[in-house]
Image 1 (cartoon, rainbow, N blue to C red):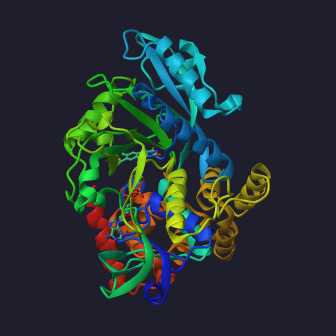
Image 2 (image 1 turned 180 degrees about the vertical axis):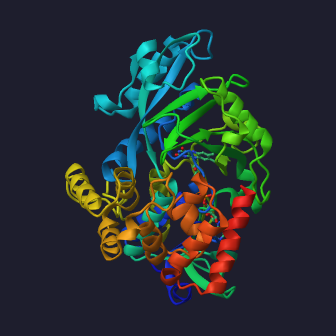
Image 3 (image 1 turned 180 degrees about the horizontal axis):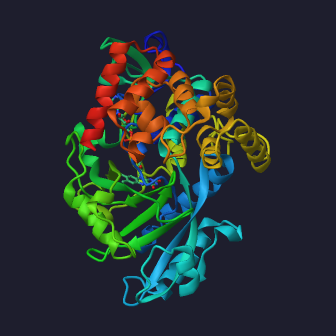
Length: 529
Ligand SMILES: Cc1cc2nc3c(=O)[nH]c(=O)nc-3n(C[C@H](O)[C@H](O)[C@H](O)COP(=O)(O)OP(=O)(O)OC[C@H]3O[C@@H](n4cnc5c(N)ncnc54)[C@H](O)[C@@H]3O)c2cc1C
């Protein structure tokens, strides 16, 4: 993946996509596959905002059934099924347990009805994806970490999980391979209508601070929470902040859906890269509140909720890390901006204000592909083109074309022969897909690259060099938060950061002054989170 800011000014585009989160990535990829001449920009890193701060679930959203949002649940479950087939390296099944306690918010019958509806709406005929009931013994065998007092048994059901930042990155790479011009650290500053069918857009390179003009016939704003910073889109949305805590492992490969005793909200404990993600909160958020911090009361709220269920209580000292993101909800016209976030629909909407300018509002990672296909349909219609969507069911850019199980077995054997441990191998396949041979070549040239970067996490040193060289890394935190979620899942010392900066400097083209700056930037980010 190559970054080329100058290329943006050298051509006329059919479509400029502003915002490189999941919505921008799918839109650019779909439009480029349909033959449009596309530019995709982001003011920061790919997935630098909410699209790397989600719960990492590809799910229908069991709790939306409570709001009778069957349409959204069905659409999301269909996308889940499609993604499990089209991207088996990127999206993998994850089973969730729901304990049933005496005098709990949901009783056994309510859960049974909800889960039956969920299975039905998914249309998935694979029994492994259907719900099951477990008696108390079976349930506690699956989840030995939970308290058994008043436990009456429990259910399990299937959804799916991903690495959200790498999902976005793979799609940006797909867009670039399909001909799109994709530039991170490029901010849209202003937009002028030159003629009814050509816009002049001023953008700034956030690295050199140079500005230039992009010419595009259509523009889509997939700017997430930044929609609320400008008119007219400010009126169309409401924001809510969601916090996750990173805790040590309490479960192996299964997650739990639980409800908080204080306000009855659903929250999750989710295994991810051998750690546990505990989240999320859902509280009103004001646009422009930067930088976003995780507050002590949000930590306490989540720990208190989790400790109701855990045999061994977590304290603040057990919190390894945290991250926060902002949900955007579409707000029907005329409704107050103070509705409870949990009461607002998670579904998505496209607003077009004048010919050729469109705003994507709200949505979910799970359903973003389908929503992006509607964006591109609208753009094509306005351009007078009739080209069908190209992403539905399409094998992902880094997915093997052959049988996934055979491919996994072959690549796992090769990785292990190269000295990479079993757990790292499992995640390496999920993270890099068909890019693995490049990593194995690096390990063949230098066996020390097969080693873990830190002993507790399944990332190897070859990934640092590979990602720095090939994945449009601009800053060290792009590498250590999104190409690998190392800084999210662990605290690194200054020495560790220095060593990493030195090891990737040749691939990133950094001299010693730049290495120093990058380490300072990461240290400041760590101190803030
Ligand atoms: C706590 C939480 C948990 C969630 N969990 C899930 C989940 O498990 N599953 C699921 O399906 N969904 C989940 N979601 C929802 C999902 O994360 C969001 O719907 C999705 O990430 C939004 O993507 P986006 O592309 O619209 O916005 P973003 O990812 O925020 O991207 C917007 C981008 O626009 C860029 N931008 C803004 N202004 C400019 C400009 N002027 N010039 C250039 N670039 C600009 C920003 O830098 C940013 O990168 C969750 C959300 C939250 C907050």
